[in-house]
Every structure is written in structure tokens, then in C-alpha cells.
Amino acid sequence: MQATDAMVREMVRKRHRRRRTLLMSLLAAVVVVGAALVGVGLVRASNTMPDKVPGTVPAQATDDKAGLLASRGKVRVDLYLDYLCPECRNTEKALAGELKTLQASGDVSVVYHPVTFLDNRSSPAGYSTRAASAAACAVEQGRFEEYTAVLFDRQPAERGPGLSEAQLIAAGQDAGITGAAFEECVRAGTYTPWVRYVSDVAASRKVALTPTVTVNGKRVEVTGADAVATLTRAVTEARG
Image (tube, rainbow, N blue to C red):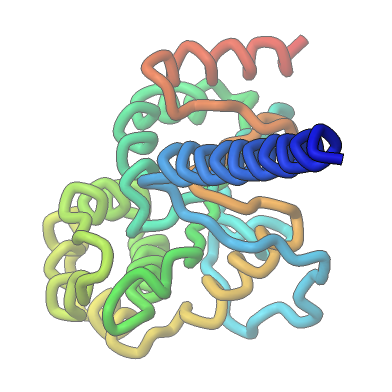
């Protein structure tokens, strides 16, 4: 009986050790995933497409009104960016020159999707929406990409208030925007409903984090050191 009791106690100890090992492994996996997502924008994807397109959309909106068409061609490159996302800033800076080259090629559609996945990471919440709406105002002035570059240069830290309305307007001046129309558009939040629509459509398409870049609908990993080469290779393959 004593031998049997000892065996049972040993079995219980082994079971507890296995359970602790499993829990530690799961915890380590969570830490690794969390570290991998530092600097990106993350959202829970939805299966539901928005049922109504906003009444006011930018002039360069795509046919489905869920993006901004910078150029038109048989190969399509889509970029999903959040103005509070640090990795989006890095991606935009890395790819800016190549995207200009692709636009000039005549056979590539470059489509931008300014999304608002990180709205709750500013305090008060909502900076991603305000910045994306202001960027849509820049579209009407023909300076979207220039304005995007300025916003990323001045990207605020997460958990802070973000750029103020006055700072968003001043960024337009540094992007080469003149006249009162841009300021009026920013102050009115003209494109706030539209950028929320863009974000909802992106989530319904299983775009769950930013930056996301796709070529003909296939996701391309462009957050590494060879981002330009990776994008160029994907476009070349899509051209056939």
C-alpha cells in the first residue's frame, strides 16, 4: 500500500509539473506575439460589410469608395495605413519612392486606405480618425501623399492627445497646401464618416492590422529591411 501511495503522489507531482510547463509555454507565446505586434495597428476583423456609403467621399475614391486611387493599371497595390501606427510610418518612408515609380509605370493601380484602427490609443481617443479625415481633405488639394509624409514625420506618441486641429492644418501648409478650403474641411471633419467607412470595409475584408500591403489581393510582407525588393518582386510576378 505504501508503494502504491508513493506512486500516486509521484503521478500527481508529474501532472502538476506538466501543467506548470504548459502554462509557462502559453505565457511565453503570448509575450512573443505581443512583442511582434509592437508598432502595428491591430483590430478585430468583422464579417459584416457596411451597408451604406457616406454621402461625401474624396474625388479620388475607388469605385467601391473604400480607398484612394493614386494611379490606375492592371496590377493593384493596396496599402492600409494608420497615422498613429509607428510601423506604418516606417513602411511609408521605405516605400515612398518605389510607389511613385509604380504609379508612373502606367500599369499599376496604387490604392491607399487611411484607417482608424488605433483610435483608442490616443487620449482622448480619436486621433487616427482626425488625422485620416484631414488627409482626405488633402486629397481635394492634390497633396495627399505629401500630406501623409508630413503627418508621419510629425507622428505623435501613442497614449497622448495627438496633433491638435491647428497642427493638422499647419501640416497642410508644409505639404504645399494653400487657401482656406483645406482648413475649412479639417475643422468641419468633412470626411470623418468616410474614413470610418474605409476602416469598416477593411475590417470586413479581414485586414486586421496595419500596415497591410497587398498585391492583387495577396498580402505582401513589407515590414522588413528588404521592403522595396519584396514589393517590387510581388508586382513583377503579378505582371506575369
